[in-house]
Length: 344
Image 1 (cartoon, helix red, strand yellow):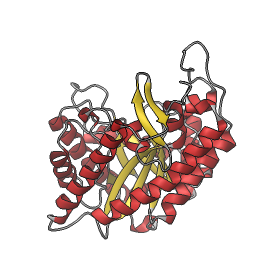
Image 2 (tube, rainbow, N blue to C red; image 1 turned 120 degrees about the vertical axis):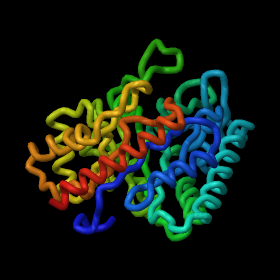
Image 3 (spheres, one colour; image 1 turned 45 degrees about the horizontal axis):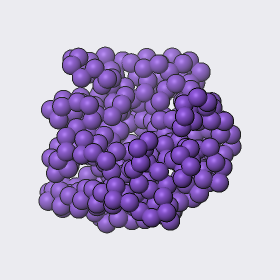
Image 4 (cartoon, rainbow, N blue to C red; image 1 turned 30 degrees about the vertical axis):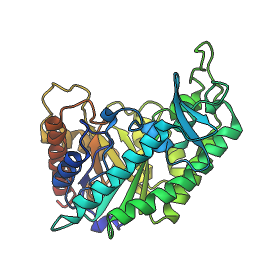
């Protein structure tokens, strides 16, 4: 990553996007998020099976085949039609990205992609016996190893679509708190699965992060919900930062984030609420203040705000395309406000 002194506060979004048109999505995202912001490869879950997060990342697994069964995605002996749909949709998106980026007069210097992390994948894939893969230590290990190999190949294809752009990766782990607390239900729903030890969680993340870095990724962050966010464990696994909504962080979590920032890690601040698709977007000054206030209270230098990325608090697939575009515009304004504070 760049030294903080050379950074500018930037904006990006978490990945999901409304609609079913990847061309429109790519053009809007890249049009709104020019340098210093980070345009991203959109996920369009509205397209159906295979464009959902689990299917999209699951299609990257190497030597592990998946297909959709009545209860969800399942590990199978041979790749099914649904896995092929997922791979085809992803290949289409990369081709469109290459065409869109190639037609630009000035390309963005970064591209952000997102994928589901190994713990959430294990919690949402099912074994042949109908139980979650998370139940089985060997399955958890195999998924992490397979994902590490698969994402490295994916990065090479992404880099080929946007030659010269630095690739940033967001690893989504929405289920990690439940995985570590032992509250993921069994397939029957009558029991919960045993908690996964913290050291195993860290090891799975480290395996994927190391593979991404070896493939040339310049920055890897792990995205988690604010509830029980394992911030210190994320940093200990070698991630470059944490992506987390700010709306309900505890004082302890803010202190953990401050320690991470002081050690050179990045905060991706989920500062713009988007759960209410009808509510008016907050004023830019209000969002900037919601970040500046705890930043000052923790004694962090305002110059460090230049290293922030600002994001929505959640994905944007539930919004209209016009509303999603407005969110990106608002985020760039917030980043500009933070940048002005950072530079005095």
